[in-house]
Image (cartoon, rainbow, N blue to C red; front, top):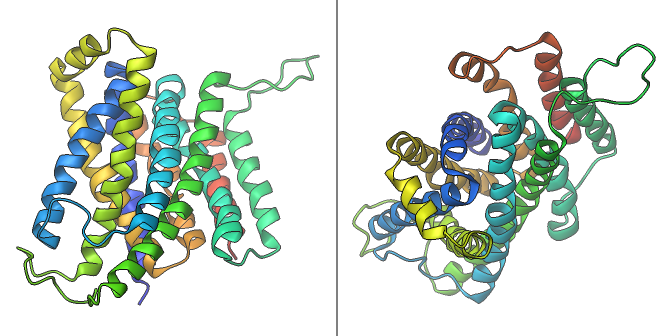
Amino acid sequence: MFAGEIISLFVALLWTVTALFAEVASKRMGSLPFNTVRMALSLVLLAATLWLTMGTPYPRYADASTWLWLLLSGAVGYVVGDYCLMQGYIHIGSRFGQLFMTLSAPAAAITGRLLLGEQMRPTAIAGMVVTLGGIALSILAKPQPGDNRLHTSLPRRGIAYATVAGICQGVGLVLSKRGLEHYGSAVANAGIDPTKALPDALLPLPLDLGIPFAATMIRATMGIAGFMLMLRLLHPDWRERLGHAIADRKAMWCTVGSTLFGPFIGVSASLLATRYTSTGIAQTLFALTPVLIIAPAAVLFHQRVTLREVLGAIISVAGVSLFFI
């Protein structure tokens, strides 16, 4: 009972830790080298996990429809979303970057309605307004006397990157859920009971627990392909950039931490959560990260936190919850 909700809360904690690691690593490595190395590490971890839980180091039983939807999810959520998120971390930091991730809830609700037929109540509009209001309260600067124009306390480029990242995360989650539905159908068509362990699996765990990791591996396959392509197209010296990134010990330790708690455990757990609850409820609980990250970010990065910023984060998360009442 409430398994999806409990897993979703756990994901919020994981993403808080992930964001802190990622901010340090992305600022030292750069967005594309960091994402490329992180995807490579996650693929190794996921392959080992699938070997233990499914008996093969690749997504077993996944059919063409499963691959199509999950690759599309990886393109939206990883290649575009994570690239923009790390760029956002570089310009505005992980604390504000995570604040904009509350936009993923409205994006997930709208996309879930269009693709999955999930219900969206009239309060969704109010939730969207409250969420945007909370973000605005956090980032808008006090107007100067005689100046009626809106000013932000953050760089506009960082705001743009973070906004796109939040929307992509919500859309990517819904695409992942559609992919998981196809995965479940493929397993059923193969005559496999997902509640039981596979006979050749090294760990006797139900197949249900391994499927989210398999889905994440498909998404990560698109992720590393996309990041490598972008790295090579945008940076002729991409080999040197990767070499410098790997040689930076502090950045690599943070990358390992970000990989473990993000693309490996966190994303897989988020997909598992959507199997036991709606994408809207899952996204609502995931959205607690902007509140959870305030205190550790202030301590670790010596950031000054204002009451307006705290209230803005709380209001934004409240808006997310209102979105799905």
